[in-house]
Length: 62
Image (cartoon, rainbow, N blue to C red; front, side, top):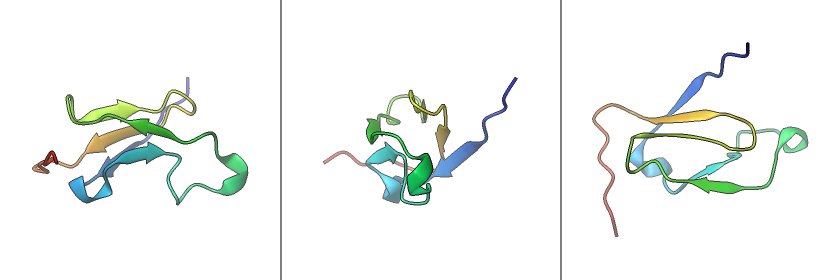
């Protein structure tokens, strides 16, 4: 069983996409945008990275 660490993000990190710029180019996959606005978390369908909105963060809609 592989344990995937959750990456905390802030509202300033939106729109959320994976891979992020911190991911090494050799291990990247096609960019996919993830919707975190409804539940406060999202999981990348390619690599399984889990993203969680930091506690107290408010997402403003444009």
